[in-house]
Amino acid sequence: MTTLIILICIFLLVLGILGCFIPIIPGPPLSFAALLLLTIFTDYQCDDDFLWQWAAIVVVVTIVDFWLQVYGVKKFGGTKKAVNGTMLGLFIGLIAPIPFGFILGPFAGAFIGAYMDEKDDLLKVVKIASGALLGFIGGVVLKLFVCVYLFYEFYITIKPLF
Image (cartoon, rainbow, N blue to C red):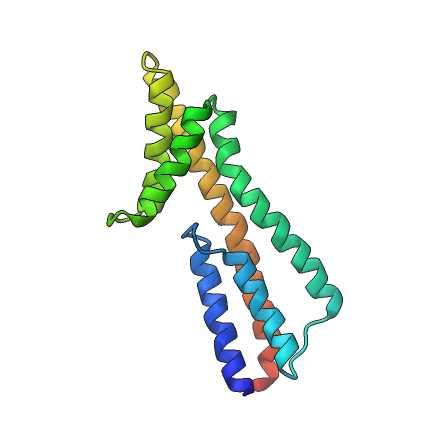
């Protein structure tokens, strides 16, 4: 049974790392769930304080990730149309069969939304769309740091197995 739980945890951790790049998959919560499962259902234990601290960190990172893209658009001068375009572009980019759609979608959506407001200033439109891209990249880096660290903690916890 322990082996099955460890395999499920590894699956969740890998899925969590993928979730850093694919916004529809909640990366850090899945990675944290792996450590929680390991602690609850096996003899391999993570410290309770560690779990509580990382539960709070995962919640904060998840909220900040959603906020970063919108903040990036607004910080670079975008309006509600650019923000909505970013969200719509993200959704379309996820389901469109194009490479890197999850990156190009928010950029294109913010570009189109900003263009609807700023038809005369193409440079400003590109700047606003770049804010969406920077917000996305910031979220990826933040989530990746958390997920890789949780994967490391998982490895340290089960290291005696090897």
